[in-house]
Length: 116
Image 1: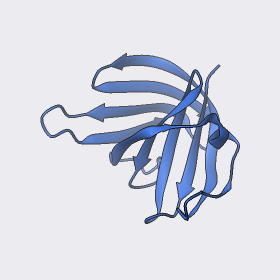
Image 2: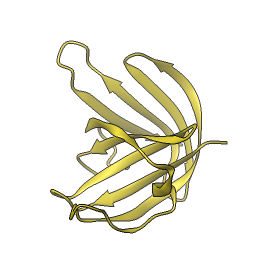
Image 3: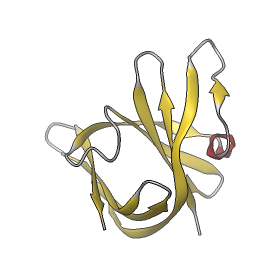
Image 4: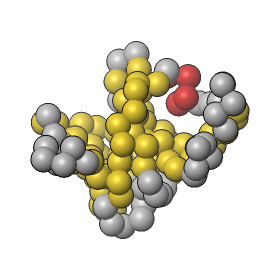
């Protein structure tokens, strides 16, 4: 089963990196707030990251702050379209459904977590 991880990252300001394992990479989004906030959170797609970050905590190269694990676990794809990704998360903190949705008109994306 594929894995996910959520890292807190303090550079350039505090945010949360939501990462989904996909083959040999991590699909990554920067979240403006904690993923369990209970309301939609601004999400920004980032370039794919190395699988290394599934188990890594510490300084990020290039003087880009530090990351610390906030949660991790496994996930199952529920549905994916060009503008929406829905996954079922089973982690230590996050147990439920997460949706990443992009608005085609504004190009903005949001993350929404719905706990069980």
